[in-house]
Image (cartoon, rainbow, N blue to C red; front, side, top):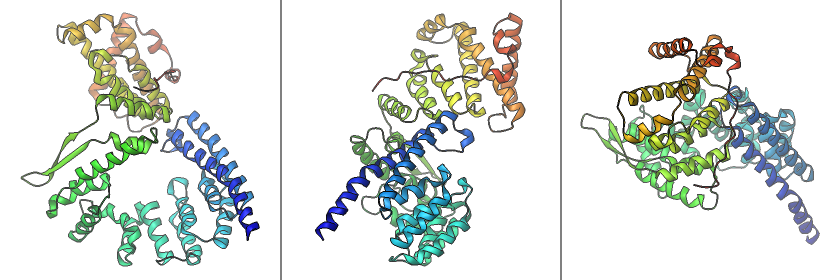
Amino acid sequence: MQRLFHELLFILFLTLPVTAQAWNYYNAGWIIRSSGIALRIYPKALTEFSILYEKAWEYAEKTYEIDPRYVPASDGLIRLANSTGRTIKAYKVLHQVMKDDPNWGTLRRAVESTRPGWGRTWEMAVRMCYLYGPMIEFKYDMVLYCKAYTGGEIHLGEHGERAVEIIRKNRIKDLDYLRLDSATSDRATRAEAAFAYNFLTRDGIANARYAKRFDRNVAWKYGYDFISEAHSRRAREYAREALENDPYDPGLIEIMKNDIQRYSQNEGGGVRAKRIECLSREEEIEYARRLLVIAPYNPKHYSDYARVKYNWAGAEGFLKDEPFLINAIVYSNHDPIILHSYVFDKWQQLDGMQQIAEGLGGPEWRAVSVQVNLNADIICPMLRGYLLLKSICETMKTAGCDCKSEQREVCEIVLADATKRNVCISEHTTPGFELYYSPIPIDLPASQ
């Protein structure tokens, strides 16, 4: 017995740090990559994601070879399979784990790998449920439980309603949270509303997302108290405390960024929401900075930082957001939506400068306008963005390409004027495909 105990300690000594490193690489990979289809992800982010995932696989595989029955290692291989192109190996690992140590955690990770975004299907997940579910001892029928989880969490679009029905009929309390999507929608029945209210008013629960849906769609309709303010406060309190130990956790930061709102009923039906508490500007800047540090290839983080740091600063921040907006364009793979937003911002800047020239605006704006080079700072960048957007949209019709006619007319007028004045020559004589931007190095302070 003592020898067995020492062997176990030795295996844990070898496997624990290696497995932890594998999961660290896994988590870091997704933070760097960010969510979304690969076509919308900046190539360097995908490269770093692949490198991190290869390292994660290497560590997980090394641990699995030391101890094939160490579930965190086998689960790591299963979770990494789609991204590293090793699904066959993962299925072999899954089969072996279910043979030796059948458990719901491993099966759950396996069915999660059947997400449609990976080209997998509901049928693949259901086969796993039927094949491995009966092997697992559980307080519920494991096949039904597995199918309900898969339908409600992984294949919600096509099979969400079926999952809710399984959960409700079989009283699978552990999966009741999957009923909230329909129970807080604007189509919720009175019975669903009662379920949602009872679920969301349990002691200590903090689910601001569904509480807001409940207030917005259900509470006023069936005469329930509004509950989202309390949920938002609890969620923020939890996040603020947790951030003291993990200040760069993106999920916690997003919770902090959500304003606290209070819902009330309109006299004619429906509801209105009033913002009653929000972060200070300093907090907004700091959280935006942290997200940018965590995920430097995420275009939204650049746009958000530019907005809270410079746009809200008025004249003091004028034009200082330019590097961040350019990087947002670059790291979005020149997404037409973000390009369109940039061009529109430049148009507004031009309009603002013209108003100041006509005597409008306060003294701080007049002081700024003296330092602005209208061509170099506004008109030429606007035309570059517009001509690049025009070039992209000639070959691809997507969101962001449906500019309003008056916006196109303004850009064409500005272009014609620049051509007439013989300025911005590089912008309007360079082929569209050569107008793409490059990332601009940015040094962020350690803290605000």
